[in-house]
Amino acid sequence: MKVISTDKAPGAIGPYSQGYEAGGLVITSGQLPVDSATGAMPEGIAAQAEESCKNVGAILAAAGVGFDKVIKTTCFLADMGDFAAFNEVYAKYFTSKPARSCVAVKTLPKNALCEIEAIAVKE
Image (cartoon, rainbow, N blue to C red):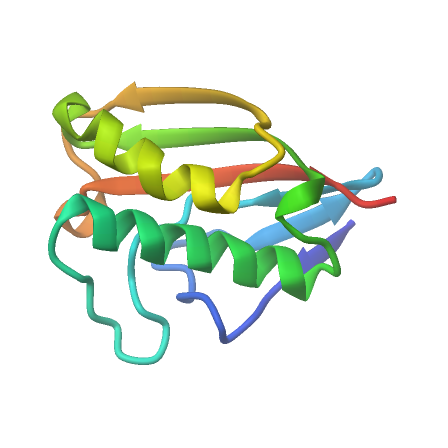
């Protein structure tokens, strides 16, 4: 097993890693829409979805894979009313249409509107 770490995505805010590589898979932790350089979170679901996708992409890149190798995502929304706007941004990044679960949750850390985690294949 290999820990994945990059300064191009926000650091962990708890006792966990940004990601792991094991058994030919790259697994990211859930990525909040936090700008890794400033620690700020943008306003609105579209901007937050964009930032979460960029953070997932940074971890994937640190592991040597891209969005095209993602086979599964789990997406968390604070409000299912944001589903369409979230999907519009998500579709620009996850063009291979990986398997996905998307659930509404009561609250996300830092009161974020979304969070994305991914599993990719490293071939």
